[in-house]
Length: 438
Image 1 (cartoon, rainbow, N blue to C red):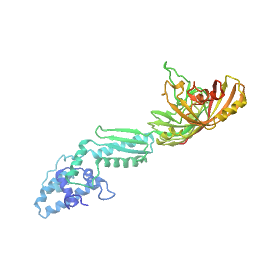
Image 2: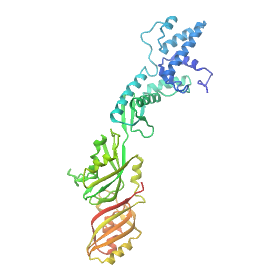
Image 3: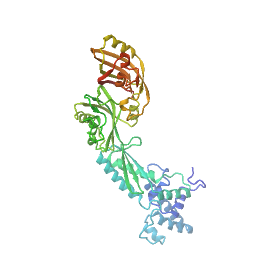
Image 4: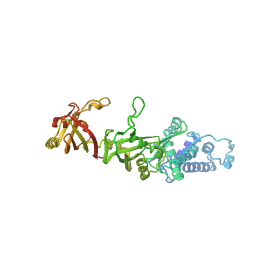
């Protein structure tokens, strides 16, 4: 495949035509032929092409080619190689200042040097293990580069953006030992050459695990009332935030599979959670240490962080309750005296039963009113006293269990109160098991 679509010019002939018209640094010339030759930097390639072109023209001059004289003079200046003896032979004055590169204005090598050192320093400080380089190139540079490519119909070129990313990436790897990662880099550095700044985008750390709530009146999130005071003294979020300094992160976000009320304990195998640390400046993760920090925060909240994960897992954990089930234990008070045989009737009534639930009246102020259909798979009861019994309820995720018991003034049907023909009240509720498809 020819370089010039309209002729069979040799590489050197094209190089000569380019350098007759444009002064170019070694890198910018070499980049125009970047896909020719292997294991060469564009600076090496560009310098080799310049020297070869000058030698070819010098040969023609020595053979008496008068047209080659003016071409060589122009090439010598635009190649920016100060060959003093050849300057004298060609009767060219040694210029104090060579013309700047038409494309990069002699900034390219400086850009690579300065930003490589800056990024390597940041990676070392933050102990990053993988990175990615991005570049925003000024429009005038892109326009000049495109002008030459179109004018000479070049095909084997690469963009200045690609060269900068590659060269800085190579240097940073050599300086830090961190690896370039094109899929999931810990940090991405965007070099904005228009404003001469570097923007750092640190990938969040995601850690999957479970939490257990051993006490009551503990919310998931910190709950601030209108008067500015806390509704509950303790929250899962409090414990999570205590680990911010471990990662030197700017913020932390919890992604949790479902929600239990503040007065409900979360026991058994725990509830799945993904903790997201935003803009972390420490990427060395010791789950043993992290679990220790979390579990020392309060005797009422316990964590078991199991592994790091990716952002895609967040959507899976949110959707995990679909087709999954939970097991609850409820201590229930009855207004009327109950007989053991009535509890047997309750168990049979909710064997594989679909329940219709409108949004509970207690949360209507913050959630829209809609109908939900959830399955109750099994209910087992224990007779405690004439007015009190315990129920184990295995049901589909998303079922409001308190309303299953009380009926919520008819908003949940069927319900326990309806079957037992009495008003019931849930005294205590615990989550014993959470089965999620994650």
